[in-house]
Image (spheres, helix red, strand yellow):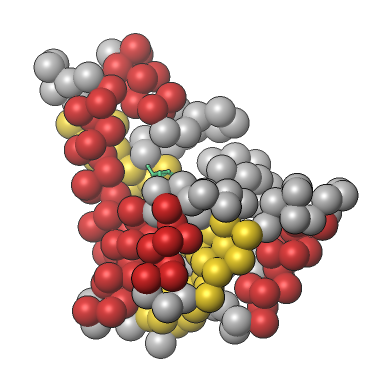
Length: 199
Ligand code: GRF
Protein backbone atom coordinates (compact mmCIF):
# COMPACT_ATOMS: atom_id res chain seq x y z
CA UNK A 1 0.00 0.00 0.00
CA UNK A 2 1.58 3.24 -1.11
CA UNK A 3 0.99 6.04 1.39
CA UNK A 4 -0.40 9.17 -0.28
CA UNK A 5 -0.24 12.72 1.06
CA UNK A 6 -2.35 15.43 -0.58
CA UNK A 7 -2.03 19.17 -1.03
CA UNK A 8 -5.29 20.79 -2.08
CA UNK A 9 -6.64 24.35 -2.06
CA UNK A 10 -10.24 24.05 -3.17
CA UNK A 11 -12.91 21.69 -4.37
CA UNK A 12 -10.81 18.54 -4.09
CA UNK A 13 -12.71 16.51 -6.66
CA UNK A 14 -9.52 14.87 -7.98
CA UNK A 15 -8.50 14.01 -4.43
CA UNK A 16 -11.96 12.53 -3.90
CA UNK A 17 -11.62 10.35 -7.00
CA UNK A 18 -8.30 9.03 -5.70
CA UNK A 19 -9.63 8.40 -2.17
CA UNK A 20 -12.60 6.54 -3.66
CA UNK A 21 -10.28 4.42 -5.80
CA UNK A 22 -8.24 3.52 -2.70
CA UNK A 23 -11.35 2.59 -0.76
CA UNK A 24 -12.79 0.49 -3.56
CA UNK A 25 -9.52 -1.40 -3.99
CA UNK A 26 -8.91 -0.06 -7.51
CA UNK A 27 -5.69 1.52 -6.22
CA UNK A 28 -3.28 -0.29 -3.89
CA UNK A 29 -2.70 2.89 -1.93
CA UNK A 30 -3.69 4.55 1.30
CA UNK A 31 -4.43 8.28 1.73
CA UNK A 32 -2.77 9.40 4.96
CA UNK A 33 -2.86 13.20 5.13
CA UNK A 34 -4.47 16.23 3.48
CA UNK A 35 -2.90 19.67 3.84
CA UNK A 36 -4.56 22.84 2.59
CA UNK A 37 -3.57 26.49 2.59
CA UNK A 38 -7.27 27.38 2.55
CA UNK A 39 -9.31 26.85 5.73
CA UNK A 40 -12.51 26.91 3.64
CA UNK A 41 -11.41 24.27 1.14
CA UNK A 42 -14.08 21.69 0.40
CA UNK A 43 -11.15 19.27 0.15
CA UNK A 44 -10.81 19.46 3.95
CA UNK A 45 -14.46 18.53 4.44
CA UNK A 46 -14.06 15.61 2.06
CA UNK A 47 -10.90 14.48 3.90
CA UNK A 48 -12.64 14.62 7.28
CA UNK A 49 -15.55 12.58 5.90
CA UNK A 50 -13.05 9.83 5.15
CA UNK A 51 -11.37 10.08 8.54
CA UNK A 52 -8.13 11.47 7.14
CA UNK A 53 -5.73 13.62 9.11
CA UNK A 54 -5.87 17.24 7.93
CA UNK A 55 -3.86 20.40 8.46
CA UNK A 56 -4.23 24.05 7.43
CA UNK A 57 -0.91 25.67 6.66
CA UNK A 58 -0.61 29.17 5.25
CA UNK A 59 1.08 32.53 5.81
CA UNK A 60 -1.31 33.30 8.66
CA UNK A 61 -0.75 30.04 10.54
CA UNK A 62 2.98 30.03 9.73
CA UNK A 63 4.30 33.54 9.00
CA UNK A 64 7.83 34.20 7.83
CA UNK A 65 9.94 33.02 4.90
CA UNK A 66 10.16 29.26 4.57
CA UNK A 67 7.84 28.62 7.52
CA UNK A 68 5.02 27.11 5.48
CA UNK A 69 7.43 24.92 3.56
CA UNK A 70 8.81 23.39 6.77
CA UNK A 71 5.36 23.12 8.32
CA UNK A 72 4.17 21.12 5.31
CA UNK A 73 7.27 18.95 5.03
CA UNK A 74 7.34 17.76 8.64
CA UNK A 75 3.82 16.26 8.86
CA UNK A 76 4.19 14.78 5.37
CA UNK A 77 7.27 12.94 6.60
CA UNK A 78 5.73 12.06 9.97
CA UNK A 79 2.75 10.49 8.19
CA UNK A 80 5.10 8.22 6.28
CA UNK A 81 4.03 9.75 2.97
CA UNK A 82 5.61 8.03 -0.04
CA UNK A 83 4.01 10.13 -2.76
CA UNK A 84 2.78 13.73 -2.51
CA UNK A 85 -0.22 14.42 -4.74
CA UNK A 86 -1.14 17.96 -5.73
CA UNK A 87 -4.85 18.18 -6.33
CA UNK A 88 -5.79 21.75 -7.16
CA UNK A 89 -3.07 23.19 -4.93
CA UNK A 90 -2.53 26.88 -5.68
CA UNK A 91 0.80 27.52 -3.99
CA UNK A 92 4.33 26.99 -5.19
CA UNK A 93 6.12 23.99 -3.68
CA UNK A 94 9.04 25.03 -1.48
CA UNK A 95 12.63 23.73 -1.49
CA UNK A 96 12.27 21.73 1.73
CA UNK A 97 9.34 19.68 0.46
CA UNK A 98 11.09 19.17 -2.89
CA UNK A 99 14.26 17.98 -1.13
CA UNK A 100 12.32 15.66 1.19
CA UNK A 101 10.39 14.08 -1.71
CA UNK A 102 12.71 14.05 -4.75
CA UNK A 103 10.76 12.91 -7.86
CA UNK A 104 7.92 12.05 -5.49
CA UNK A 105 5.56 15.00 -5.97
CA UNK A 106 3.05 14.94 -8.80
CA UNK A 107 0.48 17.39 -10.16
CA UNK A 108 -2.41 17.36 -12.59
CA UNK A 109 -2.97 20.24 -15.00
CA UNK A 110 -6.05 20.75 -17.21
CA UNK A 111 -4.28 21.28 -20.54
CA UNK A 112 -1.69 19.63 -22.73
CA UNK A 113 1.45 21.15 -21.20
CA UNK A 114 3.57 23.00 -22.13
CA UNK A 115 0.55 24.69 -23.72
CA UNK A 116 -1.39 26.94 -21.35
CA UNK A 117 0.72 26.39 -18.25
CA UNK A 118 2.73 28.57 -15.90
CA UNK A 119 1.99 31.12 -13.23
CA UNK A 120 -1.62 32.33 -13.25
CA UNK A 121 -2.73 29.53 -15.56
CA UNK A 122 -5.22 27.64 -13.44
CA UNK A 123 -8.91 26.87 -13.43
CA UNK A 124 -11.01 28.74 -15.99
CA UNK A 125 -7.98 30.78 -17.10
CA UNK A 126 -6.69 27.65 -18.80
CA UNK A 127 -9.94 26.81 -20.59
CA UNK A 128 -10.52 30.44 -21.59
CA UNK A 129 -7.04 30.48 -23.13
CA UNK A 130 -7.73 27.28 -25.08
CA UNK A 131 -10.94 28.74 -26.54
CA UNK A 132 -9.30 32.12 -27.24
CA UNK A 133 -6.42 30.41 -29.06
CA UNK A 134 -8.86 28.42 -31.21
CA UNK A 135 -7.13 25.14 -30.29
CA UNK A 136 -8.91 22.07 -31.61
CA UNK A 137 -7.39 19.88 -28.94
CA UNK A 138 -6.74 20.25 -25.24
CA UNK A 139 -6.43 17.68 -22.49
CA UNK A 140 -4.90 16.68 -19.20
CA UNK A 141 -1.26 16.48 -18.11
CA UNK A 142 0.18 14.68 -15.10
CA UNK A 143 3.72 15.77 -14.31
CA UNK A 144 6.41 15.75 -11.68
CA UNK A 145 6.65 18.92 -9.65
CA UNK A 146 9.76 21.06 -9.49
CA UNK A 147 10.40 24.66 -8.47
CA UNK A 148 8.71 26.15 -11.55
CA UNK A 149 4.96 26.18 -12.12
CA UNK A 150 3.89 23.37 -14.48
CA UNK A 151 7.43 22.71 -15.70
CA UNK A 152 8.33 19.33 -14.15
CA UNK A 153 8.82 16.27 -16.33
CA UNK A 154 5.62 15.12 -18.03
CA UNK A 155 4.56 11.62 -16.95
CA UNK A 156 1.37 11.19 -18.96
CA UNK A 157 -1.10 13.13 -21.10
CA UNK A 158 -4.66 12.53 -22.22
CA UNK A 159 -6.13 14.50 -25.12
CA UNK A 160 -9.63 16.01 -25.16
CA UNK A 161 -11.15 17.21 -28.42
CA UNK A 162 -12.36 20.82 -28.51
CA UNK A 163 -15.70 20.94 -30.36
CA UNK A 164 -16.83 23.98 -32.37
CA UNK A 165 -19.71 24.55 -29.94
CA UNK A 166 -17.50 24.40 -26.83
CA UNK A 167 -17.31 27.25 -24.37
CA UNK A 168 -14.70 27.45 -21.61
CA UNK A 169 -17.40 26.11 -19.26
CA UNK A 170 -18.36 23.05 -21.32
CA UNK A 171 -14.70 22.31 -21.87
CA UNK A 172 -13.91 22.62 -18.15
CA UNK A 173 -16.61 20.10 -17.36
CA UNK A 174 -15.41 17.56 -19.93
CA UNK A 175 -11.74 17.94 -19.02
CA UNK A 176 -12.47 17.53 -15.30
CA UNK A 177 -14.34 14.29 -15.93
CA UNK A 178 -11.29 12.97 -17.78
CA UNK A 179 -8.99 14.15 -14.98
CA UNK A 180 -10.71 12.05 -12.33
CA UNK A 181 -10.31 8.79 -14.19
CA UNK A 182 -6.91 9.60 -15.64
CA UNK A 183 -5.33 10.62 -12.32
CA UNK A 184 -6.40 7.29 -10.80
CA UNK A 185 -5.23 5.40 -13.88
CA UNK A 186 -1.79 7.05 -13.93
CA UNK A 187 -1.36 6.62 -10.18
CA UNK A 188 -2.04 2.93 -10.65
CA UNK A 189 0.72 2.83 -13.27
CA UNK A 190 3.12 4.72 -11.00
CA UNK A 191 2.45 2.28 -8.17
CA UNK A 192 2.86 -0.76 -10.43
CA UNK A 193 6.07 0.69 -11.90
CA UNK A 194 4.67 0.95 -15.45
CA UNK A 195 5.33 4.69 -15.20
CA UNK A 196 8.69 5.55 -13.66
CA UNK A 197 9.15 8.69 -11.57
CA UNK A 198 12.92 8.55 -11.90
CA UNK A 199 14.11 10.17 -15.14
C1 GRF B 1 -8.14 20.60 -11.70
O1 GRF B 1 -8.65 21.07 -12.91
C2 GRF B 1 -6.65 20.36 -11.79
O2 GRF B 1 -6.24 20.00 -13.08
C3 GRF B 1 -6.06 21.69 -11.44
O3 GRF B 1 -6.93 22.24 -10.50
C4 GRF B 1 -8.23 21.66 -10.61
C5 GRF B 1 -8.56 21.09 -9.29
O4 GRF B 1 -9.88 20.62 -9.19
N1 GRF B 1 -4.71 21.55 -11.00
P1 GRF B 1 -10.28 19.78 -7.91
O5 GRF B 1 -9.93 20.64 -6.70
O6 GRF B 1 -9.53 18.51 -7.93
O7 GRF B 1 -11.76 19.59 -8.01
